[in-house]
Image (cartoon, rainbow, N blue to C red; front, side, top):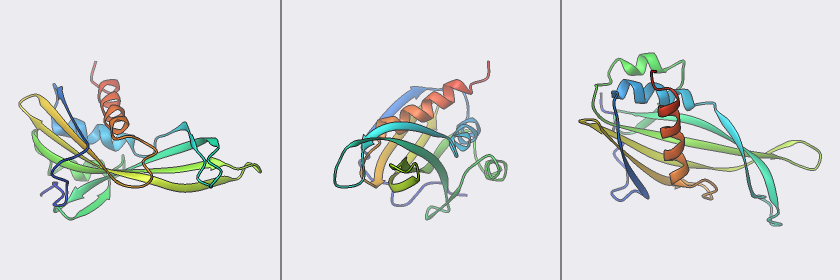
Amino acid sequence: MKRIYHQFPQKPELERKYNFKADLHYIVRTIAGIDGQFGEFITDSPDLKGRPVHAKRSINIEITDRSVNFYPLNDDTVESILRDVTDEGTIDFKVILKYSFLDDKFDRVPFKGDSFLVRTRLDSGILTMNVHHIDGMGRTESGRIADTIVDEIIKNAPK
């Protein structure tokens, strides 16, 4: 089954290469584990005042299927997806960040998030990762997406 998105940009914003000692199954399983994670960061408030706010960033992960659609990739769906993943090759993902902050009344207020396409290509022990911002205000940089994935790959590596 093809897991390469047909509209992936020819010139993505970011490309990084890493030496890698595992297979695509490990990458897909690790990226699936990122789904549902969240963290906090400081950004300008979404209102016109532009004051800094402590915002929550939550992550959703999707994987491409048949080159046109994306489907949720998480701990519940990963096993069925891994059935057609080879040891090496190319797989495209979508990383969707949702943002929110607490207002003066401590109510959680959502605001426009960011979405990224991520292409992972594993060939002879070299992992090439391309990241491209496709939607949102750019409150998170493409490099941060790559760093998060690599941090998880390292953190979850078999000891």
